[in-house]
Amino acid sequence: MGKIFRETVSLKGAELFYYDTKGEKPIIICIHGMYGRAETWSDFIDHYANGYRVIALDLRGHGQSSKPDGYYTIDEMGEDVRELMEMLEVEQAILVGHSMGGGIVGYLAARYQNMVKAVAILDKTAKGPEKHIPILSSQVKEYDAFTKEWCDTFDTRREALECIRMSSGSELETEYFVNSLYEDKSGYHFLFSKQALAAYRANEYNWMDLLSLITCKTLLIKSAGEGAVTKQDFKEMEACLKDGTVYTMSNTNHNVHLAEREEFYQIFDQFLDSIN
Image (cartoon, rainbow, N blue to C red; front, side):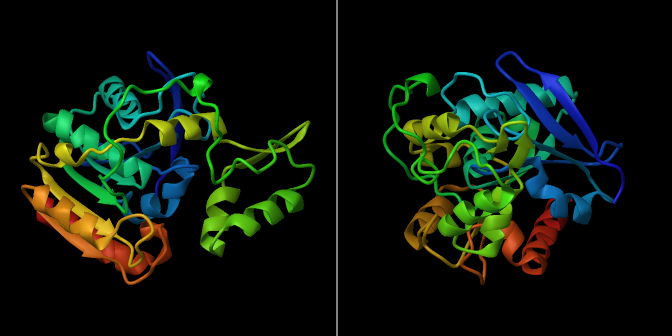
């Protein structure tokens, strides 16, 4: 793998940190899920950097990007990605998004068809509540349900690990959270904002209608489990697509791009071949 350049860019509403392998190659942009960051895609970057310029960013509210007051909807975060593409003079890219990131790339593929060559949505349902007036993160009263009991500061790394392991369903999930752990003078903290995550949860909505607006090749992947995407949701999402390919992984882990990497890359390679 070539060098990863780490950059920060100032957008209208946020500062975004991102990885960029650079080079004159076809471009893949990777969007992480809740609690994640660009580092989530390190293995993906290693796998594809020889043939592609890979860009992976920390979404607002996550990683080393800023945590402004906002709505944290797929629209708002999608506009951040669009603005980043324009600032980097990326005219068109293949987008891949996991979980929350899947909703963001779905939004972009529907709203900015000319900017998206192809899109992969990983273990994310388009089903959700009816669209409603969003709430600012500063006005959300409840923390994200998964992490609301977690301390904001841990005295030791071991204490943080014990907390993560008690909530995680696997060592892979534990590693996912550990990658967002950092230390300063006061102790150990997470790079993601609980308030931002709570706003995303509060403002989620049904975006099934966007799928019918996507004109590019689309790959839908779900885990073998039903936790994130049910079989019925998956079937309905496929029916909305004009040019879709669907695949169900053999593993039940939500992190479909990390749990069975050889299987995932085989499917993703086939998808890339179909584009090229």
